[in-house]
Length: 347
Ligand code: NAD
Ligand code: IPM
Ligand code: MN
Image 1 (cartoon, protein in one colour):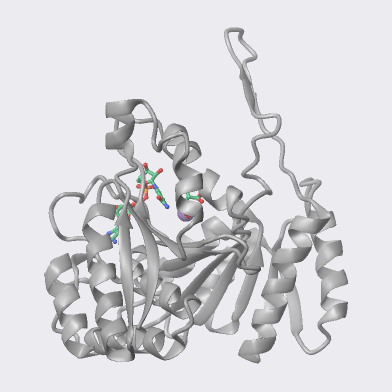
Image 2 (cartoon, rainbow, N blue to C red; image 1 turned 90 degrees about the vertical axis):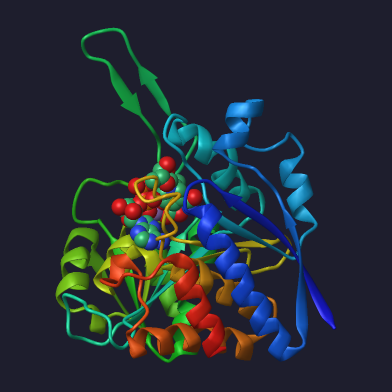
C-alpha cells in the first residue's frame, strides 16, 4: 500500500479544530482507494512563539522539506502581531518551497444560499511568492510629523511568466477561458509590465480565450455575475482579496480551499483552507471544516489520487444538498464534528 508522508501544522485557533476533520476524511478516502498516510504533527504556532520565542525551530524548513506534502490549519492569535506569525511560518514556507501557484477553487454548491443566482465554478490562480508581498524596501520612518511606511512591490519576468503559464495551462485543461486581474489604468507602475507578460503568454496559448479586468471592476462583476468567470489569474494581493470575495459570494469563506503548489515538484506543496484562525469563534467547535476538507481533497489529488479527491468533494456536495447538517456560517446549527461525521458517512 502506498503511504504518503505528510507534515501537519494545525497552527492556531480554528486551525486546531478543522485540521483533524480534514485528516480523518483524507484517511477515509485513502482506505477506499488503497493508500494511506503517515502524519507527522508539528506544534508550530503562536503558542510555541509565546513559549519559545519563535514560530518554528531554526531547522523548521529543513524538517518540512523531506515530506511528500504539508497540511496547515491556520496561524495567528490575539497578542502576537500578525507580521510575526506570518513572516515566521507561513510566508517562509511558501517562498522556500517555491510554491508560486496558490490554487483556490470556488464552487456554488447546490442548496446553498448565495446573493447570486448564477452557476459558480471558477479557480483563482494567485501568484504566491512575490508581487506586493515583498520584503524589499519595507520600512517605517517614525518619530516625526510626516512619518511614513514604504514597501516595494516586486514583479519579475520569471516569477510572473511561470504563474501565467500555469494559469493558461489550467484554463486550457478546463476548456474554459482566463481573466487577468490588473490595474493598468492607474498609476500602479507594475501592472503595465504584468499586462505585457499576459499578452506574451497568451500568444503561446492560442487555444485559450482570455480577457483582462481592472481589479475594482472585477470585484463588482464577481458579485453581480460570477458565472462568467472560469480561471482568474492575479498578483499576490489581488489574488488574496479575490479568493475571499469569491468564496463569500459562494456562501462563506469557511468553504474555500487552497493548494500552495510547487508545480515542478522539487519541493513539497502545502494545502490549507483559505480562511484564518478565526479567534472570534475559536475553541467552540463551530468552525466550518469544508475549507480544510476540500484542501485535503486537493492534497489527495496532488498525491496522485484524482478519483478519491473527487469523492471527497462529492461527499461535501451531497451533505450540503441534503441540507439538514450545516455549520452556522451557512445558516445551520451543526458543529465541526457533526458536519465532519456527515461527510464521513457519505464516503
Ligand atoms: P479569518 O478568516 O480568520 O476570519 C474572518 C471571519 O470569517 C471571522 O468572522 C471568522 O469567524 C469567519 N470564519 C473564518 N473561517 C471560518 C470557518 N471555517 N467557519 C466559520 N467561520 C469562519 O480572518 P481574520 O479575522 O482576518 O484573521 C484572523 C487571524 O488569522 C489573523 O491573525 C490573521 O493573520 C490570520 N490568518 C491566517 C491565515 C493562514 O494561516 N493561512 C489566513 C488568513 C488569516
Ligand atoms: C491567505 C492569508 C495570508 C495571505 C495572510 C494570513 C498572510 O490571508 O492565505 O489568504 O495574505 O496570504
Ligand atoms: Mn487571505
